[in-house]
Amino acid sequence: MSFIKLENIAKSYLYGEGEVHALRGVSFSIDKGEFVAIMGPSGSGKSTLLQILGFLDKPTSGKYFFEDKISDSYSDDEIARIRNEKMGFIFQAFNLLPRTTVAENVKLPLLYSKIKENEWNTLAQKAIEQVGLTHRVNHEPSRLSGGEQQRTAIARALITNPEVIFADEPTGNLDSQSGHLVMETLQKLNEEQGRTIVLITHETHTAEHAQRIIKIFDGKIESDSIVKNRRKANDMELLK
Image (cartoon, rainbow, N blue to C red; front, side, top):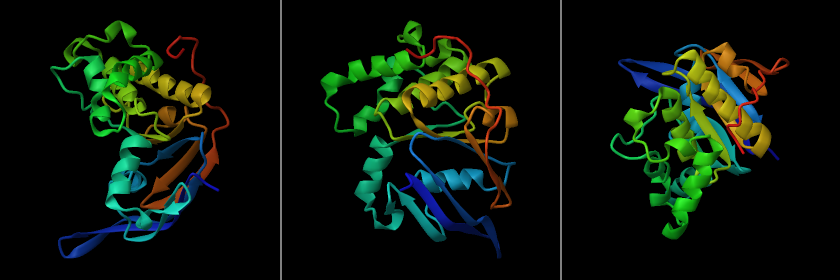
């Protein structure tokens, strides 16, 4: 059975006297351990799709299955638990607390978890090691590069050991070199740890780090294909 499955998902919004159709009958599935890029131009519906996948919004019609269970059957408490424990989120804006160290920023999701506080430092250290930032652990965001800030956000997404990581334009605020390092980090998390990653992007060179690209246009799936010439992560020791 698929880890994530969408059947004929549609989403519409009232806008003035009319209706905007953000998604129009989207269907696909994602297995555990896949790295999937959802690619499309602005206004194509890709961010709306990510919000539905991450239980941040509900479809107007269609069915969304997470771990073989239809989303409508989850209670609000179950959804909150899933989002905290089984999903990690990375956004274009890093959303770091400015006067707080890397370590403290990474530990933020644990405030809402059932994990005992005496385990927090160990978990934070492990997550920070996974993104290659042990030399920045006591730095505040103002002392980090953009790429280091985004890698801090990745560590924060990892700390609860989620089943899937949703990354919404994670390189959008970065220069090309920093963006490449961030994508290498995500790619290595997929290749070396089997993390399921769903990436939203409008950039071809970013999407090519994934194993599979789903192209969306005007709320519809335009294509769904395996990446034949997947970009290779270099030899940098970001993950150990």
